[in-house]
Amino acid sequence: MDVIFKIYMRFTGTLAVFLNLTLLFLSVFKSPQVIKNYSILIINFALTDLLASLASIFVEPRMIPSGYVVAHINYGICNRFSSSVCYMGYAFMFHLFIHSQYSLLVSFAYRYYILVKETPKVRSIIFILLISYIPSLIQFISFYVNEGDPFEIYNAINSDFPEYQIQLYMISGNLDIRKGTSSYTLFQATFAPLIIYLIIIRLRSKIIVILKDKSEHMRAETKSMHRKLLQVLTYQACLPGLFVLGIASFSIEQCNVYKSPAIEFSVHMFFELVPLLSPIIYLYYITPYRLYITSIFGKNLSKESNVFQSATHDRGSKVFTTSKNINN
Image (cartoon, rainbow, N blue to C red; front, side):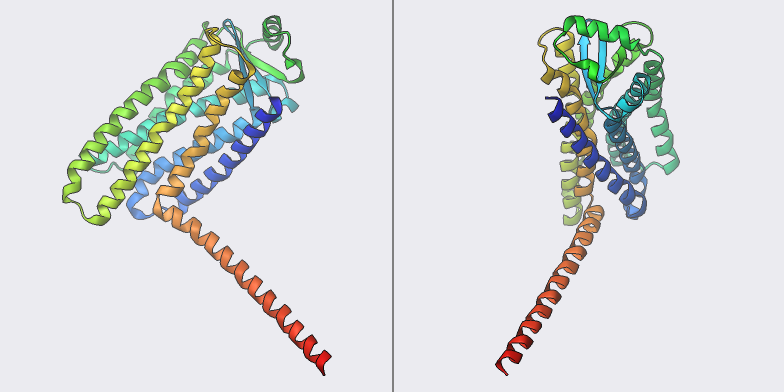
């Protein structure tokens, strides 16, 4: 199971890094004027998910709750350093996962706002994003200062799960998630994503109603654009659901409903899908981005085809010349 988890996390993390780097480049340099303001939100998404994926590769955590003790068994690169470095990496990664949820809420609020009012200025969008980052920043600080002693965490987990070979990896985590500022992190991890998810579903419903009402007076091209927008909204509304599934997996173990290594691994396996799928949605449904990518692949395929045809022609000419010489 350990090997499967490592392969999964390394593969999804690396692919997410590549996709978010691509999205970041396109949103900065290839965004058409019509979505220049909205591209600020896309840049925020790409940068957040890029850093979260890099941190995930660095840490690759498996979460094991035992009572109110929560252990992070780290399979990533941070094993070459120390448990404190692993813990800091986890705190950084997790606060980005939460910020991604708030960013998605801002994105839906933006789409609703421009349908009922005018498009906000770039400065206003940046200001709102900074405000939305504050809860995640507070979480990062509050979580970081509540690092538990790795030896005490190991003893707590080892007493409940003596069959686990966790001594092979760096261990970090919290001794009591109820105490101190850890309770704020607990709220951010369990209740905030669910609240955000419900608000997003509500905003999506309102946006769909407005678009359907306005579609009667739209041109065919505009209708097609809004049809794609509805598809984007549908897929993006599913992303917080993946995070909620990860939280549900953790809660199942925390509440002693069911315990197994598969559940422990699945928490961050669900989380990791969010920064992987988010850029795919943008790269596919934003036409200028998709056309740019397909044009690059088209050029490469065309070059390969020309090289192949040229090589085939040269080989054919040599064969013909050789055959002619033999006949002579």
